[in-house]
Amino acid sequence: MKWLSRTYVWVVMFFLYAPIGVLIFFSFNQSKSRSNFTGFTLDWYRKLFANEIILQSLVNTLIVAVVSSVIATVLGTAAAVGINSLKKGPRALVMNLNNLPIINPEIVTGVSLMLLFVMFKGGLGSLGLSFEFGYTTLILAHIAFNVSYVVLNVLPKLRQMDQFVYEAALDLGCSPLSAFFKVVLPEIMPGVLAGFLMAFTYSIDDFVISYFVSGPTSQTLPITIYSMTRRKVSPEINALSTIIFGVVLMVLLAVNFHGARAERAGRRRGGAAA
Image (cartoon, rainbow, N blue to C red; front, side, top):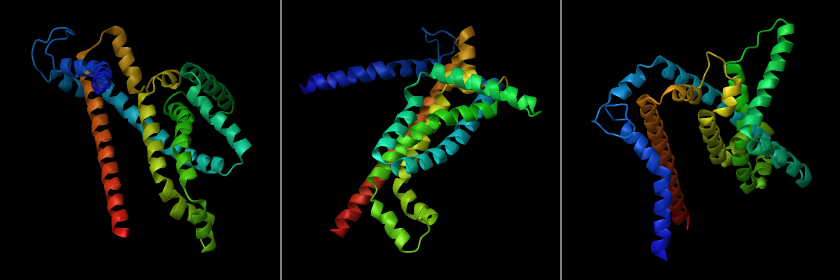
């Protein structure tokens, strides 16, 4: 049965990665044809880096992703610490509320956030304050749906941690804030980093929510690509997708390599201690 399981895995992998392979292959095609390869060229990559609309959208995406992910990581970590200290009943209630943004359809979240910002815009406008759709609304919207993912990544690390270590730090003279940064945070740092990376990934990838809360001068990369594909699929999009896939793949390999090295170092320290 081993051959059957291996065949099944290879078939699944083929269906997952064959479209990406085709996209990468035709990003080097001389013509705009999506079925005939007429020759190798890097012209689409040159045109991509000369396209100001795509480059500006990429900058917008990175700004929104970095800012929203950092803020969501701070808020989510603090929320996870608070949730972990609750009793069983209130904790279950809060966790159900935390999971709502994850299971809620994105179209509902996007429309509701848009209506909320419109309401705030009207209210702040009557007070003489400016509130326009743009970076502010994008960042706030991305924070709103990213906090839940950070909580889900940090909370298991808090449950795995020995609570007596934190109490021991308090007994030895640390303030609660100092004990958190010196004892708790190093223990849960893998969960914090995982939450940040997940928030960053979802922020870059988001289209539906961003579509409803973005402004005319703050469109993200997915919105720009969608606008381009509505007219005609340009090979520049193939080149852009290839670059994004390559960057994500390198980051994934680097993270896995670092994790493997840390695991081997931990095993060596454990063996030396024994």
